[in-house]
Length: 255
Image (tube, rainbow, N blue to C red; front, top):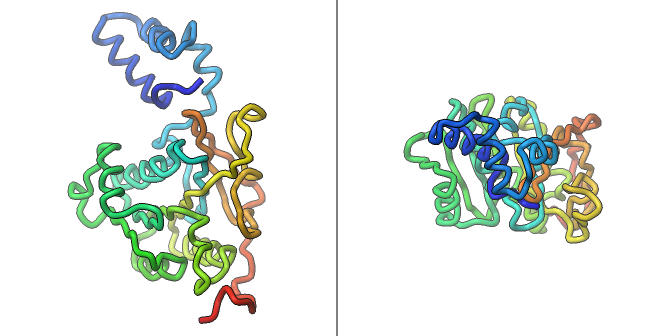
């Protein structure tokens, strides 16, 4: 069953309800749970206990991290990545959103949907919808950003579309090296394969990432999976290994 809102927002609604109606918080929580189809809050919480809010997720990120945010279409992966970027700005960091999927007006609309106005934070948030986006382009645009800056790339598989750029595995490693060198956090939005079956597991995992061409996913430190209202963080204990960065001799790269 999909919740009407993330669990952290339901908790906020319960606190407001308790204040408004002068009832105990546990009674308000149970009332919210009943509206979501659960007999009591403890049953709802047991099912969604592993879920994270964007703020909680941001608190788990560290400089040098290379992070996947993955989901099937319509599950909110890009909005989650934007929420991470805007939260970074709200806590005093900088962030940049690079997208090969959205137009400028799309980005503005989605920022508005999460209550963020870039004009309130001049110079601290930027977005780029250029067709030229690739690893070298992003690195060139972010050479001078301060440590702690969060970069979102929307999305992973679209970096693999142009024949005049390096293969995706090379681009990921270049961006990982960039993150480590400058102390950045790089977040890749990623698609989940259509074969993912939610009846066999509640959320996808690394085996469900859609990869048209082979990519070594051990470069990623963390992976975040979004499905049916749940946000799940998977630490990647084998992460951090960089692949060789020399370009292979094939027709994917001619420059």
